[in-house]
Length: 567
Ligand code: ARG
Image (cartoon, rainbow, N blue to C red; front, side, top):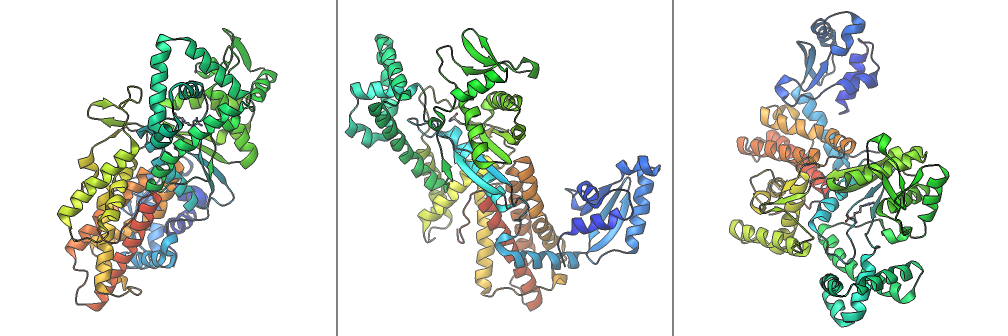
């Protein structure tokens, strides 16, 4: 038996209506409240062609389908303009559990993206500055999208577009040569660089000629000056050391780390091409692309001194990436505040006549909010990411020490749970929403949190350990009560949720599904004794437990979160 029930139902329905199987399948809904049906088919769109009222069509369809239906389909009933379908619990459960167990770790995944290239650009911190909390959001969301697309068989390349070029490096080099020491900077890494940067601005207020010096370094570096580039490269390597420590703890790695500097020398050609295509106009000495017809302010391409700008670099990067990867999609995960920037330069690429521009997509997300208001990096009160990760782990360790002091590998589990909590918290709401940063909330083991899902996974592992056996093919008739059926329903819709998350670029769809599954499993666990005396029932309940364990683990992995087996 297959679990592609929706498709099977679409095939049956399509025989009776004038829609293709594909159109029918797209129209079938999964009601949130399962009392209304496990599938629902709305008849509104058929009314015009059939010249009948939707409730009449629904009644006729329900009647026809009831006459010959597959084993898993228990009932088809018309409710107003809808036909609602109910599964036969035992047949449905048997098929779902068999499918999860047969597919194991690949359950929920597919090959539907095969042959399609997706670039996912995320994280992209700025060299010589600390990795800040804004980049945490990009890293967490980006990594999840990266995982989801891979799981669906897409050919994914993850990309870190480091901010490694700009006038600040002229200032930093000037400051370093005047006041810095190699020993000090080697030791203090980014903190030392930030200090030099602050010092530069203080001194330049008193002695503006420093600004000229800084600018001359920028020009020299553009022309390939060896000393300047050597120091710059060293700053980059030092910064990467901090970022790498953070990536290791977040369990993130990139297929390609390619900074903005890579596009030096590739932007003049962009300006020329824009000129040739008649898109470039002069405005106050600068060169811009007018976007008024598209309801946006102009996109700045060249500064009046000929210097290039952030959008120019992005246009050059997109062209270069397309030539290299022939991508179907190139996703850019950055904060909401950059939405206009992305809309502008992507429009310019479209106006240049590249039809692949439709594959460029900005994936914006909301920022973190703190009790005291918005977090600022400019005021210098930036939260250091390593401190934040340490705090997550320390707070979790304190909870473990209280709840389960004899746990083995406490430190490792605390890191898995603490970092997991931080990630889950960011992934639990729709991307665009701001995230309230609240340790108590995200670390609540009973809340809608990462630790809660991880704890449920560990609980399932523990039940299976205690049973000491691997469950065999269950008798599904033992799992027809409401609680196990609800668990099965959620196991069944897991692949659909992953696909939905991919289409909408919304990790929360998976995160929320994990919480729903964990809640349903816990309801089942509390209501029904799993290790009961009846062998058949025990085997069936263990089988459901094992399938739940598998899906929770896969779901957490998609969200980039570890699933410890004990907590
Ligand atoms: N480094 C930038 C920042 O921190 C993010 C880069 C986003 N990606 C891009 N292609 N512009 O704001």
